[in-house]
Length: 213
Image (cartoon, rainbow, N blue to C red; front, side, top):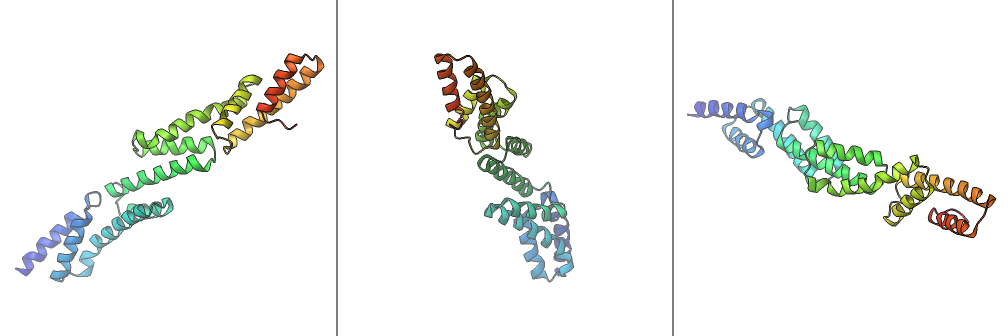
C-alpha cells in the first residue's frame, strides 16, 4: 500500500510541477504528503522550488515594491514560470507602479508615453490607464509648443500649463523659455515702432510668459 501511495504521489508531483499550471495550494498539499510518506528530498526539490518562487512573487506583490517584484518574477521565470498567472499579475502590477511613478515624478513626456505603452501591453484595464492618458493629452500640446512660432499661441499654451500645475515637467521649462524668447523678439520689434495698444498687448504677453522685469 505504501509503494502504491508513493507511485501515485510521484505521478501527482510530475503533473503538479508543470510550470504554467502550477497551483501553490496543490503543490503545498503534495509536499506535505511527500513528507509524510518519507519521499526523498530530491524527488520533492522541483515542486519545492516552484512553490518558493510563486510565494516569492506573491510576497513581493503584497509589498508593492516594483524592484522587488521584478526580481521575484525573474527568479520565477528562470524556473519556467514566466507564463504563470501569478507572474502575469505581478508584471501588470509593475507596469501600474511604473505608470504611476511616471505621472508623479515628472521625468519627461517620453517616459510617460513609454510607461503607458508598457501598461497597455501588460493588459492593464482602461480604468487603470485613464488618468495617465488624460495627463498625456494635457502635456502633448506643451511639447508641441516648442515647434510653434506664433507668439500668442505659445504663450497661451504655457499659461494654461501653468494653471494646470505642469511646471514640474521639463517640457514646461523648455516651452516657457521658447515663449520668453518670442516675447523678447516681439518687444524689440514693438519698441521700434511703438503704439500704446501694441505695447500693452506685448507687456501682458510678457507677464503671462513670466518674463523677468
